[in-house]
Length: 89
Image 1 (cartoon, rainbow, N blue to C red):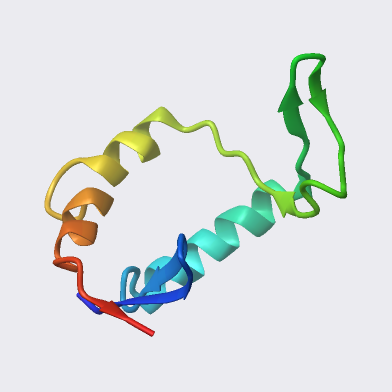
Image 2: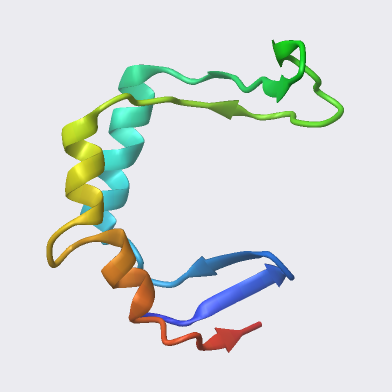
């Protein structure tokens, strides 16, 4: 597993976290599902505030996919733990 490359104090990427095939699969899934504007949650409910959050998102409600992503030898937690806190950048 690669190093963590920090672009800010709390924003980073982990090199090699997903394989090229996994990236392609997630891109295809997102595009097939469709992206939409991302609201924020307030005491009045979900509202659009482009000055706070200006991006699109895709929400996939798939319990089996979620379970697979956190268990087994390919779990995202196991992968992240292999970074050993190495920091670069």
